[in-house]
Image 1 (cartoon, helix red, strand yellow):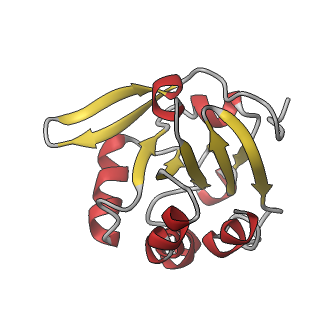
Image 2: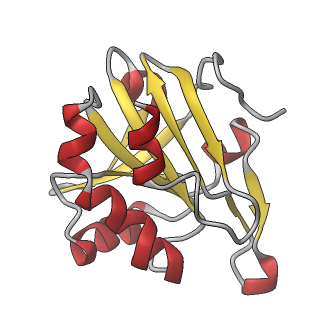
Image 3: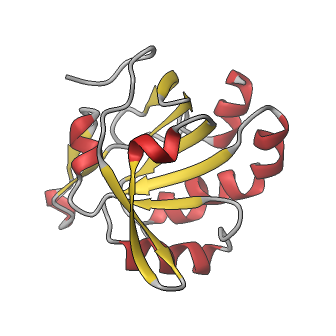
Length: 160
């Protein structure tokens, strides 16, 4: 079942890259007590994700925070090493928190997986964004396959 507005996020675990290497973080802890602008990409370093999706949230970080967002986070079905390298390469450090969903547990738990096997990607998370307040989905924007419209930072700004 796909998550919907008003639903509480399921309990899963992400990994983040730190100076000490990958560290696990429970989703319940990450989303507790804050407003999070979360977006999901099919894959780090992939064309649309690298050219438009992540850069949009980096560029609009201050505007999102001015509208009440405490944390901007990106999740993808990649390991923490890849997400950390992508963050550095894109200049996202300090603006966007990378949440590695290496096994796709989060994407599966929210019912937003996609089959990227024709591109050699296997099962991945769909392209989507959501505004999460204290672990509850306030807005949910799921892209149609191949699209990049409603999950953008600009669209999210309009929702805040």
